[in-house]
Image (cartoon, rainbow, N blue to C red; front, side, top):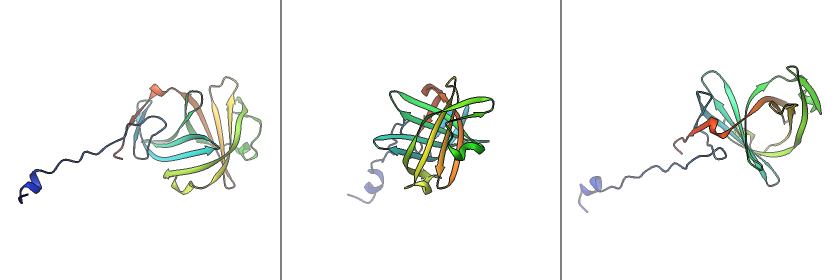
Length: 169
């Protein structure tokens, strides 16, 4: 092999980017939703026994959203934003928020793995509760991290409303 052949015969290495779906989004990907682009800056994987679900932290130009994704009998998606909910610390069975009645839908505990901005959460065990309004059009999620309870309000979306542009890994 001559000197120049080292430069001219090199095979190009193509970066392989795995096709993404709503259950395999990675930190660094771009998510298009509601006519806006969001960078995925955090990912939380929740595990309860053999059941797994995901929350992706989406950083937009003016806001932060959370995209929740889980495969139950079918793919379920929701968009969530953090809210202040004083009664959240008690994990009530029912409450009123913005003139809507919410009832407990499910609750439990989950092991957490975090990536990106959420990497410090890895190894934690959280308590959670999911509530829905009477029309099942609005949901409130509570998560207890150590002694702090975070509340988020969300609504269901369809998979065709989201487009994923894979990052470089």
